Structure formats: structure tokens, C-alpha cells
Amino acid sequence: MSDATLQRARSGDEEAFSALTDPHRRELQVHCYRILGSVQDAEDLVQETLLAAWHGLGGFEGRASLRSWLYTIATNRCLNALRDSARRPAAVLGAEVPDPTRMGEPIWLQPYPDALLEGLPDRAPGPGARYETREAVGLAFVSGLQRMAPHQRAVLVLRDVLGYRAAEVAVMLDSSEASVNSALQRARAALDAVPARPEGPAVPDSPAQRALLVRFSDAFEAGDIDALVALLTDDAWLRMPPEPHEYQGRPAIAAFLRTRALWTSARGLRLVATRANGQPAFGYYVGDPNCGVARAAGLLVLGVEGAAITELTRFGDTGVLPWFGLPRTLPG
Image (cartoon, rainbow, N blue to C red; front, side, top):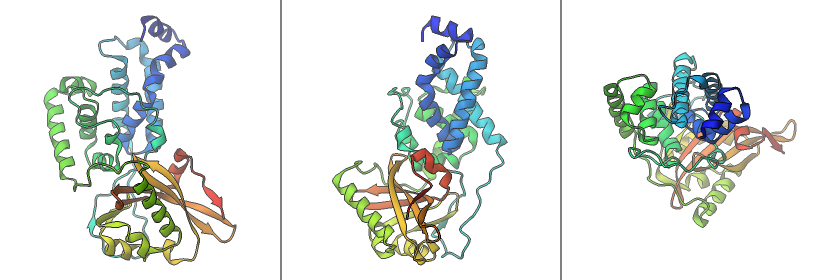
């Protein structure tokens, strides 16, 4: 950042302001996503952050870097949004379902498109970081954050993902260093309490993974539940945020799938491959016999280990599909 560019931006030069802030935009969106759990809300908050920065640039004194200043604005805007939000996850399963293996905590969570991760700047986090940038956008990590109090989420992301020191985080959150350290300790304990998931994703686009995904797609589109669950590990999980119902193991997952109209009707099923949160994913579509098209029904994100599926996460919110470049309907 040159002083001349900063001065031009302060005088109202929009191109100079864009030159200052555009390099940080994508990483700010990922940061807001981690805290909010929603790709749409993250984009809205980035817009709010940049607008606040535009109006407040005259007060930027340069004591911290511009990047840190933007992160401060974004983090506090996210915390304000969480305090003001009246959203409550709603149960929508409707029909009678088998007893779940576990009733998890309802959380608000959307998947995040891998395509948006491609533009992340290659910046090394601070020395205190515990997680790599892309690791910290995985579903296990982000869903764990959504189970924490907002202040704890912010502290953990600023400290363990971005690597800011406790004293820096205290300034960013207008808090004390003791409060930051206490919140970090509780946040780490909360993540440690989340049931362990397989470590390390399968190698993306490896021959074994490609073959597995083809078999999954074929079984899904054929409505073959037996073939589908045969691709799962013995201890695989099925999760459906914001639903609290969670099913583990082939018998439990198969029993649940057999209660769903998606599988019991004769309507055609279609899958379109994509990637979300660093994991293989599919948009799924259900045939509409009245108009000869298949309508979007949601997004499936798969956890893969070796040549088997360890986790299925179903998102029923079709509003996220445009973020993945997926259409609302397919030809019948």
C-alpha cells in the first residue's frame, strides 16, 4: 500500500480505494463465512465492511496494517449481525422418521463453493495459527464454530486461523487480553469435544475418488439404496443441518433413506458434480413429471477416506445453488 494511493482514496478516489481493498476481498468473505456459516450472509457483510471502510478511511491511522483494520471491521460487523439475527433453525423433515443415532444441536450452516477458494491470496498466517487457511473452511471446522458463542468463534478464528496475537485480538474486539485468552480456551475445548472425524481428505481427483463418485452417482440416480450404503464406511454419518437428526452406520442411514419420498417415489433423480468446503459435492434434482424437468432439491457434500464415504451432509436450501454455478432446473 503506497501513501499516494491511500491519500487518493481518502480524497474520494474510488479506483484508489478499490486498489487498496480488492486484494483482501476474497479472504474477508471466507472470514465472514467462518463466523456466520452462510455464504450469502458473508457476501453481504463484506459489502458492509467495505462501505464502512470507505466512510471511515479518514480515521485509519496506520497503527496496524490495512488488512488488520479491515479484519477488525469485518469481525465486528459479523458479531453485530449475529446479535441482531432473529433466525432460528427450523425442523423440516416432516414425515415420521426412524429414531436418530444422535440428536445434534440445530445450527445454521450453508456449504461454501470451492470455486471461491481459488482466489484466496497466498498469505502465510501469523506464527500462532493452528490451522491452514483451507483446512479451516472444512465442514467439520465451520460446523464446530457455529456451536460456539459468537465471541468465542471470532477469537478462535482470529487467533488459530489468522494467527493474530492475543493482544492484537483484544484491540480488534475492544476487549481485554485476559478475556481473549479465556474465550480461546473455551473455544478450543468446544472443538475438542466435537466427535472426531477422519483426518485428511482424500486426494482430490484421484482415480480412486473419481471411481467412488461415479458409483455414488449411479446408485443415487438409480434410487438404489443398497448400492449407495455399500459405498459407506461402517461408521459413516448422515447429517442434515439445520436438522438435529444424525444417523450413523449403514443400517441406520439405509432405514432413514427408505422413509424419504425422494427414494420411494418413481421420480427421476439427477446429480451434478461440484465441490464444497474442500470436499466432493453434488447438486441433486428430482424429476417433475408435470413439466418434463428435474427441479433442484438441495446439495450433498461427501466426506471421503480412501475408497469409501465417511460422511454425507445434505443441505436442503436450494438458494445456495447459484453460488455453485448450478441451475434451478435440468432438462427432463
